[in-house]
Figure: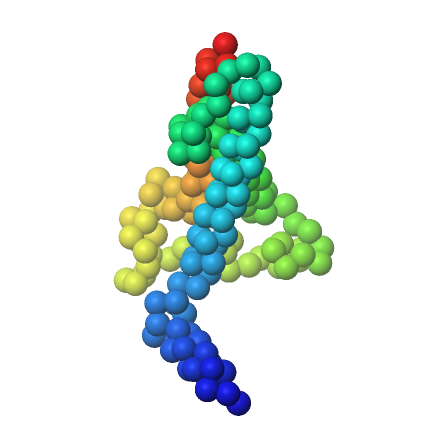
Amino acid sequence: MSIFSLTWHYKFYIILKKDSFVYRNGLSIVFLSLTVVALFAQYCFGFVEYNKALSEKGMPEIMFNNYITTGHFIEGTFENWESEFFQMGLYIALTVFLRQKGSAESKSLDEMEDVDRVPVPVQDAPWPVRKGGVYLAVYQYSLSIAFFLLFFLSFMAHAYGTWLDNAYRR
């Protein structure tokens, strides 16, 4: 093995030690990086497309750094996010009630599962479980609530972007 190979393996080992930040947060780092790359790509391609549309209408083209404030970028970005959040929220909400034979995400067709039992408020349980009532109900559906709230916010931002884009093009 060459010195370069040993150095690379050592650095990779240091990064992935179980107590390292990267090891404990690898999934978040990868998905955040993918989101940034995808947003940048959308920004670049959208900028080119937007300027092309503006020049075809005889309007002045915009600078690269100004594209982020246009309705075209806001509308396109939040239209994508809107559909993703709606899809995930619906998927999560429906998997609570519906079953699918052979699916790893589905509950059992025949037996009751641990997630269906009424939570017992023990000492180390999360505070909504210990408190019960409305707090427990919100806690039980918090993931679905979060996705539908993100959907609604994306819907509103998409509508704002559409309004902004239409107002500018008039």
